[in-house]
Length: 416
Image (cartoon, rainbow, N blue to C red):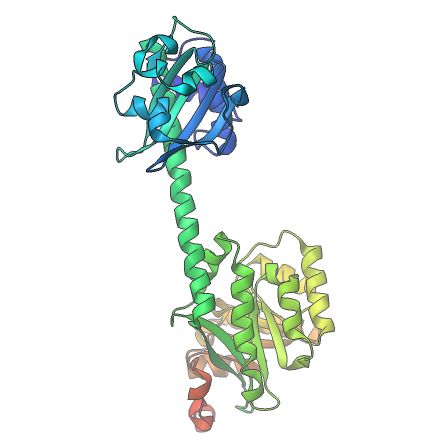
């Protein structure tokens, strides 16, 4: 194998191997260790990590058991070649271990029959020593040189970047997991309800339940929960709390809950909706790509068998919502706010809303307009045939205890 004498050359060698990415995941470390061992013609290459008291073998390539080692082996720091090397008690290149006085007196030199050793520290960007990258052989190797040491330093530099990045990602993952679990266990999840009105009679026909975590909008929380695999747990918790409000809502009204495509087919959530009948509407949003439509259809079917209705959210904001309408046959179409804003002054929006209303009539679905912020918008929507609506003009999201009858409605005379 040709000598590698610069970081650029090493990176070029690494990048030429598609199985050995510079972002060192476990498989990348394994491939790089193989490259190192073969290049130096040694029997074993390994990566170790230092704790305050021990050296832990993290990755190996070669005949580790022939040296009494394996992944996970722990050894007191003071008994290791690697720690002694990082402290300056031992050179990085040892062609003949049994010839070096400070190694000749170590039992491991003889029990493992160490002939030659070469090692360098793995340092993070702040100078912290993570551990070492080293190679061992039973045979002495008088050809080992400073050039080999430089090569190993280059490899350790590349490896350190990947290990540090992986460690940072793991710390972020652990932090997010802790944050989400604390939210789930501490009762910091709340629900506000936004009323949905009949635009002709001014009656409230339903409420959309909106989650609040630490009194914040939950989008970032759900995104973080998805990163650490707790998204379904968070969805279940928020839906469970929302459903606890159902019995306290006026009879004849329904509760609308947002549900991700992923959650529709989850057994973790299915049992929540049994026996609730048509008082529950589940809104499918298009904020998440649907890769398995068959699975989504089966999840929708299972929920409908439990009596729930289906709404497609954000209709008109993109292709996905139209695809949901065609494939899932929802009971309710919720028009996206982009179709509602200034509809009173925009003929094209009025025409589009009108066409969606006609389509809904053909497929026996109701239409709800979201994000109504003015009387003019509400009147325009009613004129084109939209029967139901919600938005800040009609009623702000509030906690259940703050709902107060007429105080939750617009004044009827404003519509005359």
